[in-house]
Image (cartoon, rainbow, N blue to C red; front, side, top):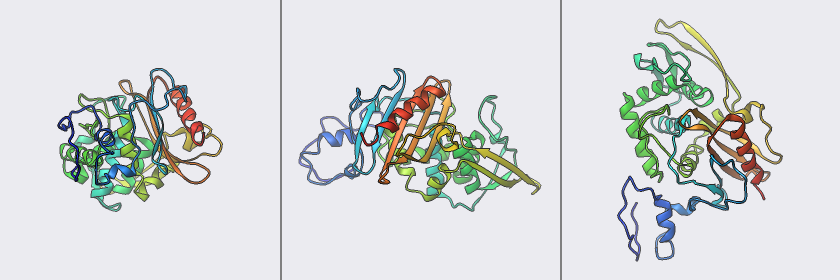
Length: 307
């Protein structure tokens, strides 16, 4: 990031810094002469109004008012955490920016995952589907093998795609994020923060197809095997607010979101919602101990909108 300013930063910026670039800009805002692009974003410290909501002790959370550009609540929002399948939001962003909905993706042998408990749709080498089909399965069902299909289809290899993911994260200021795979299965040096997930979700919500997909409760489609024969799949969203299994607080409309769960990451959820005036909010809970606790925490955040 560059710009004209009369002040100097007291430390050099590095990609490994645990201080968000947006927090540094905020601290210098009174002496800058140019308006930073952070003027369009929520900026805040690690904890914001921590006594306002009784989030469970082991969880991390944030509530971001997109219209008024305010952080309404934050608990350890700059702490690095394993994102699990929240990773797939960035996978979708890179795919949408570099591919077309109707492009055909072909599975390689790499889609055969060794992790026995990994969420997958059991793709076989030679299977084909469009990027639009793949994104629906990726975001609704969180299939890890489909994340590999997308990565290789867009960039030629997972490594090349992950490089694109990290460049995208850097471009939106997510300086406390680093990816090593496109699906979010636990790996060393694969991390993000609640605040960076807000930045990533804020980026993703600019895409109409992304918003359409995350608002879908069920999805059925037909793709093809290596011989061109039809293969059918029907899935349901893993988001319990969207399926109706969890009640949405009064006055709130949930556009959609993304779940993520691994033993290392705990239970995670990012939501895009709107209040009675249609103003947008992003709410995030990470590292809850179980699914019930996750949704209890998220409902507390949603209840806080408008307070």
